[in-house]
Image 1 (cartoon, rainbow, N blue to C red):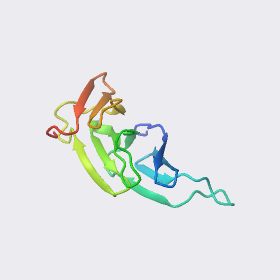
Image 2 (image 1 turned 180 degrees about the vertical axis):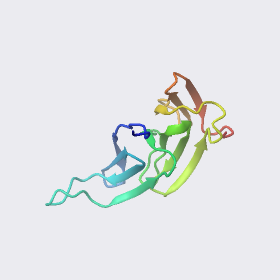
Image 3 (image 1 turned 135 degrees about the horizontal axis):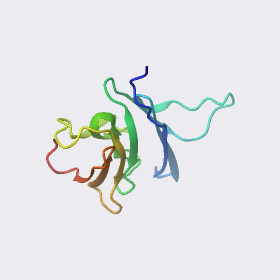
Image 4 (image 1 turned 90 degrees about the vertical axis):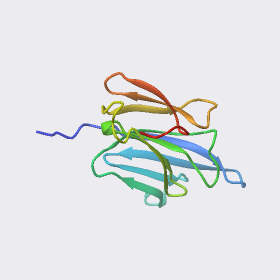
Length: 145
């Protein structure tokens, strides 16, 4: 009997202007890990280049993620990460930082996060949907719970 929830693999690509043109980034979550790569294909043997950042969670799994296209730059990316048990984190994989942690106490809802998205045109507002049908709009600048 398997008690671990099945979590799909999510893959995202984002173009970042590094001053010399566009430099693509790829992010994907699988099982309890989230990986960030500079996307430039693979070497001759089909092995991808070295990861920029790798995150591992012990008690929860990443279920989804989204990159803020408004705030992206060559040295910073704001990435929302939805987790099982209702948590949401904002990471910056280029600076190797956790920028924000939301619903840590799970007072709002403790069901799995099914999707996270930055509100288009906003550098601070994001939408979170939950397994039990709950949807919330959050401002990254407000007090974290």
